[in-house]
Image 1 (cartoon, rainbow over the protein chains, first blue to last red):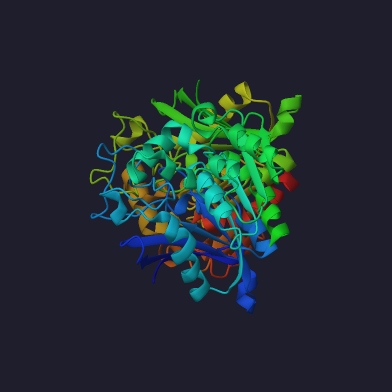
Image 2: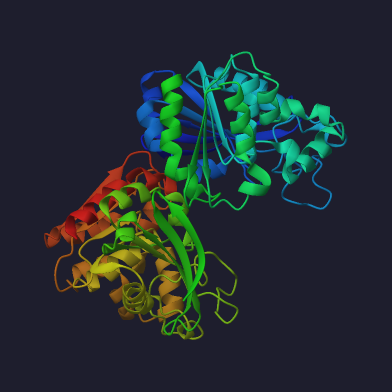
Length: 279
Length: 279
């Protein structure tokens, strides 16, 4: 594991690392925020943050404004990349932003040529937590959050691994990818045309089919001025499915907010407090 | 004046505008944060933020994490671009980052070809405040801050216009540009080789020569792990000159912090409170 960058921030540290992944078969970069309490030998819980389309490990760390409260609460934050990268890694044939590089959709691809590297579900749920546990002063307590495509990732990963994550949150998540253009394109490309294979990666389908061991609480924030709301994000599908089985899901619609990090930075503190409450 | 972007944030608004400048003779872009108190008809004071080399109006607005407290304090923030831009605007002949586009150094250039557009001192002190006063719900109270090259800009503009700015602050400012490589290159290019012309744009020279009407209080934060500290920034020159005349200047050396926005985001709240105290 190679240290790429290190910056002191709010008394703690932001660090970036590169490592050779055995699951995605390429070098992966991730960033970690460590609160200052680790300087005095304390172990801290970890919030995993999954970013959206076109993003890397850097967007959240530079723009979310999460460190002050995370430092006060004593929470580490880990932000992985959004896809495998490198010359060997297949991209969208037309280089579009919504598939391939920067758009791993947190699934294990089964279709060539993508299955060779696009194993982001296993990377996020198995390899990365093991790496974090081995190298940093963290407890086994974990929560997961994300934005847009990463909000989708947080929902499906949290719901399917209820032993591993004590709470789930998302900003502007893709809530029913099987029925929106971004999701249909990604699932077709990574998983093939048999849509029964898609359900394991669709938060609304998981909710409808009750594909979880226990009910990990979910908090979602969504701006009502978000350009992607009606066509891509559609949180009402998930909300309705949750209501039918009395699943603990809170959806906050936020008047006037859009899809940007200006929105995330406005409400990230509420998400941090939500996760801290459940650790 | 054309609205380029608008994002709701922490209850207030981040907006970007483009306008044709009569001083720089090109289109200029700036960003403004308006706290939510303006929604109910209140006028607010303005903090001007001058960015550093390679930056635009966007860096501070996306990375500083200033909005929550600025909203609480009821302070607007205006972030101009760091140079004139456009096809007509002369750049560094070799395209280097430290001169020309993105590196206006907040001076009025007197040397061709730069004097045609590089009139950033007048743009920041005259045209932009007039535009802000005319179009936004602001009082006449102003303060000024900045980072690196923009810290230099904040210092010289604040000191030379003590009627207009009630307080000055800077992160990692270039404190004695006449005697550092970045400053010597910029001043030679924009102002020519006669270094007597440089003194009006050098904070340490202004301090030594007491070139100000009254003593506007100055707050500086500087990381001691900043790669540019010894060669380019050199705050000790300014600190020593201030001590000689009992000028109210506070220099905080911050252990372990570097030149990045991770540093700025760690201490921006203290700067906002400093300015709020003096409005």
